[in-house]
Image (cartoon, rainbow, N blue to C red; front, side, top):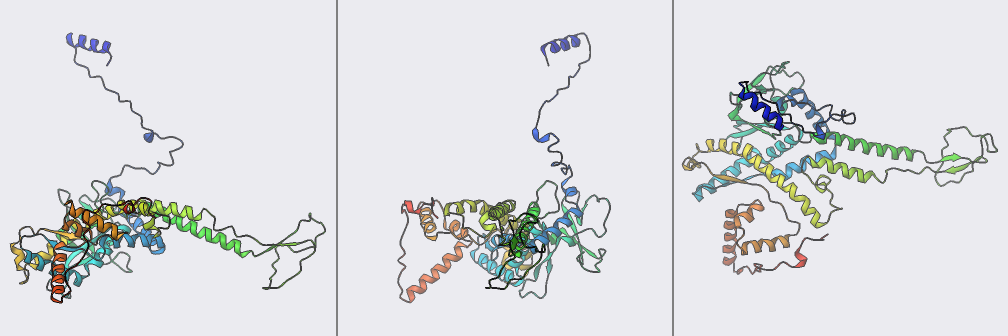
Amino acid sequence: MWPFDRLRTSASRRKGHPRRTVPAVVRARYDAAQTTVENVRHWAMADGLSADSANSVDVRRKLRQRARYEVANNSYAKGIVLTIANDTVGTGPRLQMLAGDSEANRRTEQAFARWAVAVGLAEKLRTMRMAKATDGEVFGVLTANPLIDSPIKLDVRLVEADRVAAPTVAMLPVVGDIDGIHLDAWGNPAGYTVLRNHPGEIGAWRSDYDLLSAADVIHYFRTDRPGQHRGVPEITPALPLFAQLRRYTLAVLAAAETAADFAAVLYTDAPANGEAAAVEPMDIIELEKRMATTLPDGWKLGQVKAEQPATTYSEFKRELLNEIARCLNLPYNIAACNSSGYNYASGRLDHQTYYKSIRVEQAHMGEVVLDRIFAAWCAEAMLTAELAVLRTVSGLPHQWFFDGTEHVDPAKEARAQAMRLGSHTTTLAIEYARQGRDWETELRQRAKERQLMNELGLGQDQAQQHQGTPVTESDTDEDDS
C-alpha cells in the first residue's frame, strides 16, 4: 500500500467510514507454469487427479499387462527384476530374537527357521518382490495349511493383484471401496475382496469371491503419493524405453540383414544407351563358390558393404539402459551385468546408492511383510509345548538379517574391519550384521571349533593381528582398475 493510500484510509476511518480491505496481489512467475506454443503438447497429459483416481482400475490393468509382457520378452527387463529380487531377499531373512532369555531366543530362532524352510518362505518373498516391480503390488493371505511339515500350520498364500478387485465393475467409484479394498471411517483397510478365480481365466466369474479381514491379508506395495491405496509397476517409467530398446535392436538387425542379402551388384560407368551390353534390370544371377566368371561388356562387379550395426549402436544402448535402470536405483553395470567400462573406485561408488536402496527395501519388507508373518506365527507357536515360553516374553523383540554383500577386495575389508574393532568404533554385532549373520550364533560356532581343535591337538590359531595397522597407499581405492 502506498503512503497516500495509507493516509486516505486513516482519514476515512476517522470520518466513520467502514474499514476497507485492499486485496494483495502476488506477482510471481514460474517458467514451468507457463503454457506456450513450444510446450503445450509436452504438458497435454498433465492432470490433477487424486492418487486413487490416477491409478484407476483400467490404468493399473493396462500397466500390469504391458509390464508383464516386457519382462517376459525382454531379457534386460527380466534380468533387472530377477537381480532386484535376489539382492533384496537373497537366500531368505533370518530371525534374531532380542529377549532376555537366551535359551528361549535360540529355540524360537531355530523353530522359525525350520518353519520358513517348510513353507518356502524365501521363494515366496522373492516372488513378492518380483511382483512388486512388475505388477506394482502383491497380496499375501495368512491361512492354515495342514500339509505343512511343521507343528505350526501357518502358511502364506500369494494372491496376484488382479484377484483383489470389486466383484462388479461399477461405472462410478464407491466411497470407502478402492477396487476391492474396504476402508473404515479412518481410512484404514478393514477388509479385502478376493476373487476366487483369476479374471484372466477362461470362464471365470467375478461374482465368486471371498471377503477377508485385513488382519489376514498382507498388502505389499510402494506408496508414491499420499492417499494412495493401490500400487503401480515400479518399471512403469521404463516401459516406453524398453520398447524403444527392442525396436532399435530389431531395426539394426533388419538393416544388417538387408545389407547382407545383396551379395553383389553389377554397375557400369557408361552413359545411358552407351556401349555397355544390354542387361535386364534387377535380374538375379546365382554365383557358385570359388568360381571365376565373365561379365557382360562394359559392366563391373561390386560388393555391397554392410553398414550395420552402426558405431553408435552400443553407445545408444548403454545410455538407454542407464536411463531405464535409474528409476529402479540400479547402476548401469548391474542392469547390464557388464562392468567392463568401470574401474574399481567407480564401481564401488555406483554401488553405494544401489545397496542403500536395497537396505531401505529390506526394512520395508521387514515391517510390512515379515513382522506380520512373525506375529501370526508366534500366535500359533505359543500353543505348542516347545514354544510355550513365548507367552512370557513381553513384546517379542526381534530383528531381521538378510544376506550381506560381498566385498570386491576381501583383504582390504578385513584390515579395515580389524582397525574398526581395534579402535572401538564398531562391534561384533555390527560387523556380523553386515554379512547377514547373527554374532551370537557365529561366536558359539567358533567356540565349538576351538574346543574341538584343542581336543585333537591342533593348537591355537596363529592368525595375525592387524589391529592398528596403518593403511598404505596400495590399500586405497583410488585409481584401482
